[in-house]
Amino acid sequence: MQFLSRRTFAALAVLGALSAGAHAQENGTRDEAKAMVDAAVEHVKKVGPDQAFKDFTDKNNKAWQKKDLYVFAYSSEGVSVAHGANDKLIGKNLIDLKDPNGKPLIRELRDTAQKGGGWVEYDWPHPQTKKIESKISYTRKMANFDGFVGVGAYR
Image 1 (cartoon, rainbow, N blue to C red):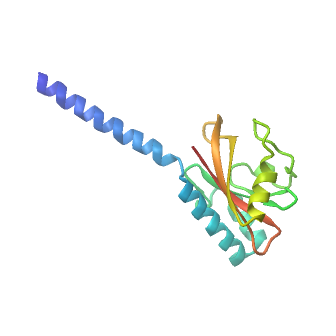
Image 2 (image 1 turned 90 degrees about the vertical axis):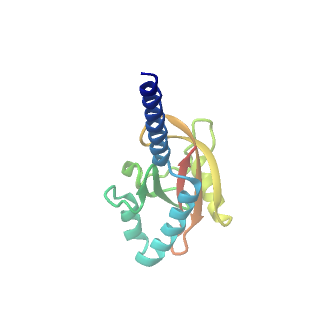
Image 3 (image 1 turned 45 degrees about the vertical axis):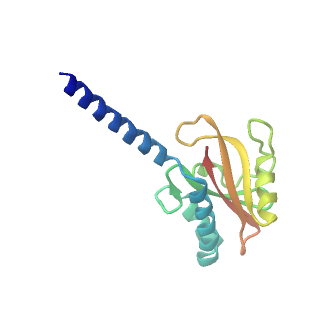
């Protein structure tokens, strides 16, 4: 009986570890976010901005939406031109959008991209849980469009 209990406990521990690993895999990493931004910049160069923005926003195009990562793009004026998590934002000028803590989000993303690219930390609703979570986004300026692309990883 004691052997069965140890065996059952071991099996439950393995299952718990596997499920914890599966949950962790649902969240994208910083490296994956940066790689998606680099790929997105190249995609805009290859197919042109109009087609690329459609591709980034298309929920059926899994190349631009992996785990909880998605591509977003804005003009330098702050107009949303692509958004993998919320297509209702397309065409809206969000330059004055602030995160829940008052951080001028789109301005900081744009300014960071214009300085050569980099990371911006802020709080944002998670697209799957809808809860406000800490997020860090990598952003880069596009070569053939006056704007930037970004991808964020929840932490």
